[in-house]
Length: 197
Length: 190
Image 1 (cartoon, one colour):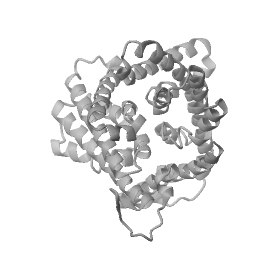
Image 2 (cartoon, each protein chain N blue to C red):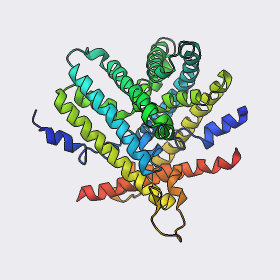
Image 3 (cartoon, helix red, strand yellow):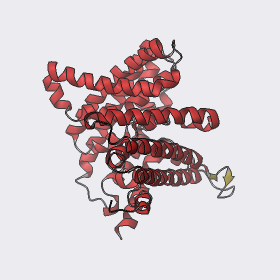
Image 4 (cartoon, rainbow over the protein chains, first blue to last red):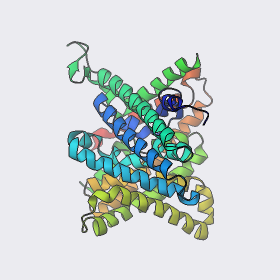
């Protein structure tokens, strides 16, 4: 255990911020970020699953046989995804409808399975929770940033309030499918520019 | 909704990679070489069609009559994982040439969100059995088409002089955006 708790937590926020550094879990990043609200909702749902599955996998890491570990991880993750689905249906139904198919698809999000395999199955419970929280919050931040950029440029509004004044013609390309790819590509380019200095 | 509409919609307008954003990890990961792209596309076509049909049957025969609809996410991922394993064993025994061609891509499909996503979308749209079959084939063909086109473009980009911060994934995403734009143009057809 060379790394401390805070290091495990903060690495997810910048050094290993999942969508940009590792280019993992791109489907929800591109699919739900038409508004910032959707981005944050999706990010929090993923964080919840990530923290819970990291916790359970870390506590069971000595019991799970290594030959069938991937199958066990998937079942654990799927269980928490169903929990999330049911909770969102009960308490955040409009958001659940907007995010649609991407909530059940957290099961196959490479970030969640990746953290289970690379971190939670080798480290203790406290560190795994810190890791899950860090990566999850980093994921939420990236989704929120991309959502905010696309919402402001694409609709000229931010949480329903106009940003640019009446003469602004919305850049609708940004909220449509092709805009998602281009916007993420350019953000990645900016991250590379900042990171290389 | 007619069959023609499902086919054109599935391949072009609602292309699973470029319009619905499902399965983007293998899309970016396996598109650097034409050879791997073709392997991945074939594996997805194979599994997606089988999984679409089988999850529809499981849903209609087991989950709905026993009131277990809320368990579908777990049920589907288990079905897909088992199916991939089964397909792998079957191909290894009976068509070794195809098995060798698909290689590593077959096991990777379990965590490909295009497969699970397409199955869930079919159920959400409440399609009939035949329509599910046609829709799955259309999605699978759309996936293959987009992936192979993208791999072709990416092979050419290697020869171009790309600014350093834009290299690799970054330029790949921008290219995917432009490719997505061409698919988007089919929107007027349905």
